[in-house]
Image 1 (cartoon, rainbow, N blue to C red):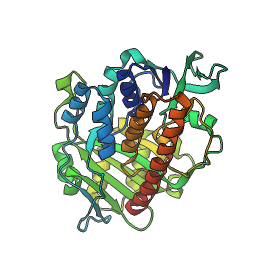
Image 2: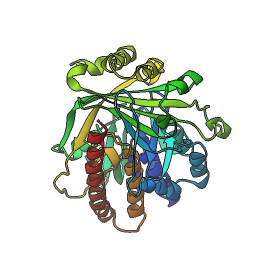
Image 3: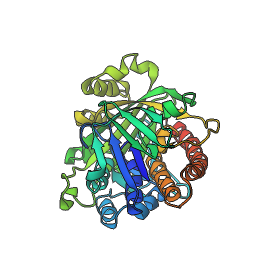
Image 4: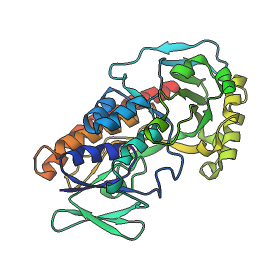
Length: 370
């Protein structure tokens, strides 16, 4: 069996490792020209299920390095008003404990062992179902590749999903996000609210503006494991009403985005905008906030979906763990010995139940945070 995976983020490599362990031929197809061709995300939390999937499916050395380079997270989840007048810590639901990692570092760890199974500069264009029951993927570079199964792990704007399920119910909310990160220097530590240094802090009022803050402090420098050195940083995400962002929001450059975020939060506690002004412009990017509804059932074909490609959800700190967990679910089904389409059908039933329960949870959490 040959499995083609569109997207080499986190879920795709986790799935690839699990399948290769059982002798499955795997090819990861990644649109980026290199692993660090663009900003590759920030601190992310993998809940208990996601953490278990890493431990189960990654090679032992990779998993140990993921744990060793994870974040020192000794705090919980707290909220505050825009003037930081006191903090309220919330009780976390079961299953939240897991592992908090730097996304790029974990991705580097996983892809290092998949060099012979990863093709960069290989963006998805479309697929064709073949008469022999397989699938052919046409890539943006003009080449094609054939396999027995295509797995979409290509995120919220999945091209595979658009072809497989053209009527899939996904919608963008009337809010926009500006993500960034600020190096965790001595000055930054002075400015950062204490709950954000050890955990996650959500700041917001009643007008749709919100700011998420969370520091990433590496337990051990990734350079100890032959990777690029890691710099501690403060991750932040500013949520703004769409009407504050204007119609050209996604065309703005990093400097303009940063200025927009600072201006939009100018009446908040001055330490917050000071933190934003110290941001590393390489990591200031715009994003939409998308959500989705469970689609009508479809007949299984040799094409399936994982994570945000299957069920876009608002940001709430759970989507990465959900995606990696689903990669583990799919790996379990594919190596079970069941006929391929039976395995795909069984996986998709599990994925839809699990995934859209997560969408509902993320929606509630996102509304509360904003």
